Amino acid sequence: MDKSLEAEATITVRGTKQGIKEAQSLILEIAGSVQEETTIEMIIENRFHRSLIGAGGQGLKDLIARCGGPTDPKLQAGLIRL
Image 1: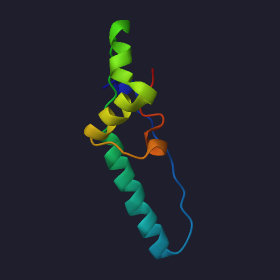
Image 2 (image 1 turned 45 degrees about the vertical axis):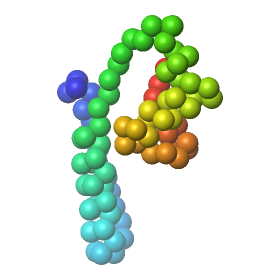
Image 3 (image 1 turned 60 degrees about the vertical axis):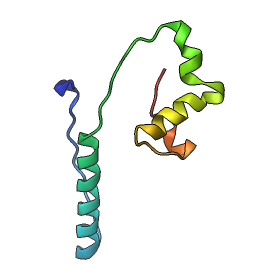
């Protein structure tokens, strides 16, 4: 992973003390899961594109689901870039 791509953000949360604590725990949970994400770039020969992508993108959808990703097509959008 390229550490030069790391970013820092400042988040301001307003609300009740309880609401702020809940928001903080949710934000930290999201930040923790993002650290577990991996980006891989690979070159795949043109002759394999059809079998990898599948009819209507079904091959990619199945691949995302098998790797533990979401099964909802709306949530899958943007996970793989070609």
